[in-house]
Length: 94
Image (cartoon, rainbow, N blue to C red; front, side, top):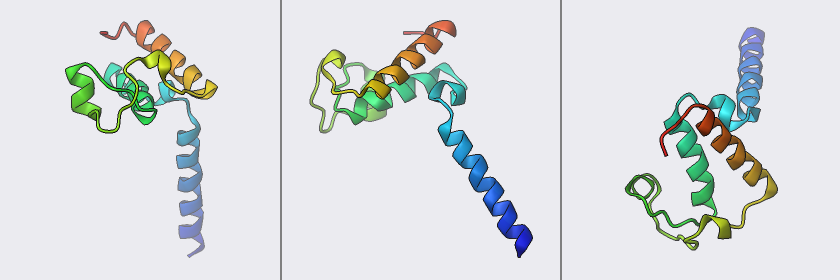
């Protein structure tokens, strides 16, 4: 029983460590980066205009047509900037 508990705690700590990693450290592809960035926009009420955005997130409950108008926290702004920097570095399509 003690081994099971130790294994469970080790896995729990490992999972918590992954959750603490920045989004860009966990992203494996340009699609992952795109999704992570737009997931933040969706959570704040962005109204998507592209087919891709609408297909992935829909526009139900959207409130903002312009990303600059979104009520983003400083942390969210930093995360988005980090993601965009990584997208540029990987030469992800726009």
